[in-house]
Image 1: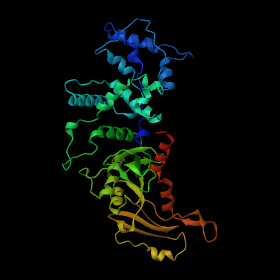
Image 2 (image 1 turned 90 degrees about the horizontal axis):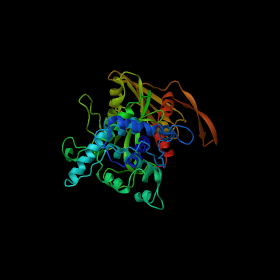
Image 3 (image 1 turned 180 degrees about the vertical axis):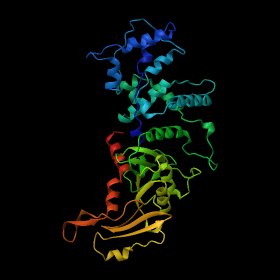
Image 4 (image 1 turned 135 degrees about the vertical axis):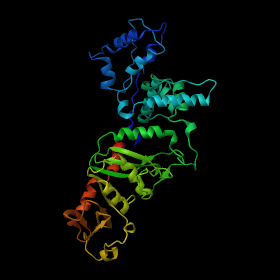
Length: 428
């Protein structure tokens, strides 16, 4: 999911090279005039060069050398901020919250001092932006190894012209998102396994949740496949990618992820006003924090998360849910047993409605190819519709009764899987 959400752009690729012949320091006015002279150039088809580079193709890196008609030189110190602000990629504002790049630069330089105090390497914000853009390029174009992008035989100009291989290696060695000195050891209160990337995770969640939520929402697991050795990597035999990092995702009907949580060893970071409903139900509570209360939102998930106290708790806050459930999680279950349903005809269903702590809860069991149990705080059996099923005895398709709760569930479930399929279109 991270590869789909982060849209990196390489910017400022040729600015340093075009300002390398320095003899004097320019004033801020001269720098602005210098930059306007650069952005006012015309390309071969008559269009503006800045429009050609950044609006038509944001990944394009110009190969022609800039002619310095004004015979100006590179500046140092404070006036350089004017140029750096101009060459920021505009798409970064859609991906990162304000101040994240500054934090990455600060933590990277801090780690450089901690690692090599006698001769630290200093990085700038534009270095980090270019490095992130190069990482995105490398995920789209496959090479034998990282250094191949700079090799004579396989040289990739969009990367090699932006940054030298040695500078790229230095940034990769020192880049940090958080301060190592603030890390809380294991078995201590407040320990966070994701401490090193916590600012980046919080940034992505903040940006994704800034998009207006759809009424129908879906919570499910997602695997970020990897072959790397890491203690947080998990094995899920039923997933297409069996090894990787496990994510819990809140997605809309379009497959857009509004919030995600990386699976860790412990799940105990609840707020003071939140009830402890169990490990899996607490995942739903944390992901549902961004959902507005009393606005008639609908939440769909599978039986991994479902529990009766969770459904009642959400219903009291105006968030209605529908999900499958395991029979052993229904206390004093009044539904027909599978033994009785086994002798009944296909498509038979049995519904039981009860009031739990002032909330009406509908539970239903339906016989299709297998038995499936549903529970909902807003949907029930009626109205019953017809669906097509293949009958193995008659060797043809027949119409069978399908309760409304089943139709509603099938219509809105699987949106995290839709996100996976959309990500599969993008080459990794």
